[in-house]
Image 1: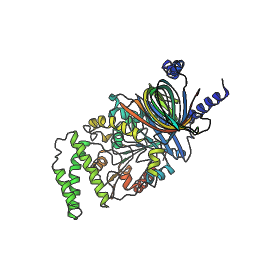
Image 2: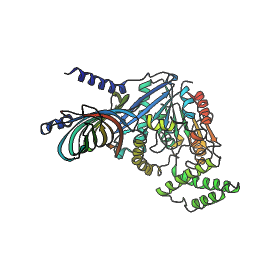
Image 3: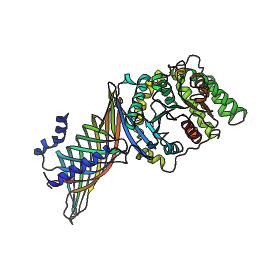
Image 4: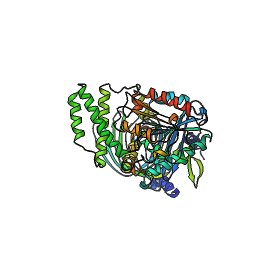
Length: 360
Length: 200
């Protein structure tokens, strides 16, 4: 064989094998990736930060069909201080974010996502050792998934603590709360004389859509209005914004990171609508009493996507001992608490983990 | 599957006997503009129509070619996966040659091709799977799927006294990953490269 051709083959093989090298598992600046392949889905788990601490926070992203990296890893106000102390595991769920594979539509169910989460936890323990502490941090839909997972007694044994940030557990009840909370916010802003025309219009819009017997379109309507209200409250400086993209960070993230918006959008197109139709009809309210884990609940005061009253319900429904559960209402945050008050979130998470590690 | 890959690679050679010259291409290619990779390819004109216009100081020649070829594309999506595509392509090439009386030759070339191939992606790190509660890990996890491709090239011959047919080109291509979560996942590429016509 021609010697030049042999060199070419060698170069190709060497380049291909770059993706095969395992990074150092335990360090204070780990950058690891592994995948879970299960029932047609290939789900990436990026583990970044201080794996040497042996304390892991497994992030359950929002959505459904959001991304484990976008909004969490990108949010340096949130990720950097936590990754200094702990290892953060950013998992892209089945058919979500930058997950690959072609899972059957029949596997896009809440039960399957719970099963996947169980296997992700098992894979983490297999990879890093059974002596690691794993905390779950669920945001929005991730809160729903975490609550569903932890409502099984036996699964709680694998987890040291549960951190919920604006997490769902009952869409039907949440819609009733959202309706009222939106009206209250509109009234408050009108009374304060701030943009009365905008808030009167919103109020009329909300009143025109009763929530007595909601259908799927009503959830979509309220979800859209909730984000519009949140952006308006940001403009009116009711919500603080501690997280901003640094110059060039957005470009780097979209074009030079593991995140790919095309993949993420394609996944969302399939998974979100399918899962959404199931979960809006599912209430976990009657199952939350099974949760006995140490739990930290962080919630934006102005969250109308997962209304603040759900936080109080969650705090009340779980069976965790009084001294092992804490509810923090973030006064200047909405649904995107990690964007509005990431520093307070980080402070509370560090305090919580220092008190409730499995090995403490 | 192996037989189809072999066929895809060798398909252009089957028709080699029918043509006189073939062109090879190689260059840098980036998935989603910044994820580095490369491409290699070869193509042959299976049909060609020439139109020559002679003038006092120069002549112009327009070539319309139907081409067929094969291509290989590889890229690395950092901290995620790398992908390898192998396929056959066919399409149309337009070439305009302007030859000055003093010997200076300018060649402009553009082509558009469509094709089909196989795509295998290799997941970074270990891929774990469970079987009856037992966990196992493997390197280079991933799948192989069919992948349609379309590519467009535009370029010109480097000016040189000996008229060596080396061209530069800019290439954009769109690969469509089938069977991705019940969607067709587009993969846009942008690249630059060199091509060389053999047997000139």
